[in-house]
Amino acid sequence: MKVVSTILKEIDTVLSKVTEEQLQEIAGQLQKAKRIFVIGEGRSGLMAKSFAMRLMHLGATVYVVGETITPSIAEGDLLVAISGSGTTKSVVWTAEKTKSLGCAVIAVTTNPESPLGAAATEILHVPAATKYRRENERQTIQPLGSLFDQCSHIVFDAVCLLFGKLNDMDNSKAFQLHSNLE
Image (cartoon, rainbow, N blue to C red; front, side, top):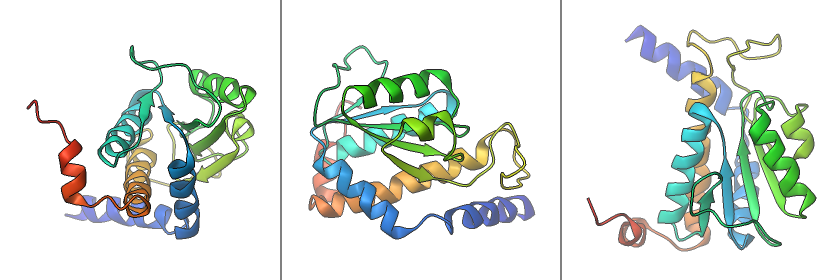
């Protein structure tokens, strides 16, 4: 269990730097948005899709950028863009385009000074390690961006919990929106 304990300590170290106030602020922004769009690539994209799915369970109108049923973004909509490095070209381009259309962009990244951070209207800084192992990044025993992905998933679940409370969505109401085709 030494490996699991070490991973849990790494996660705790990173998440201790994310404030409850910032999570509440983001949940409030999500609640006010007409529609929510999410984007990420690779494992960050999987975290984004997981986040979108949970937001849907909580009653949000949410889309994953790049899926065939994703409509155009419009005034009053919000984009959550996730990239550990903040340099993933498709994510940065989408954030820049979204901002140019007058929509809010929440960047989830390890690097607030990145191109993604520059395109954002709000930054959720998750100070974990990425695959690049830059000088200022948290040390980790895990490969690539695992620590960022794990921490992002937990941060997204915390935001969803706060979003659900704002919308008076409990487990039984969320369960009604869960897939019944399985």
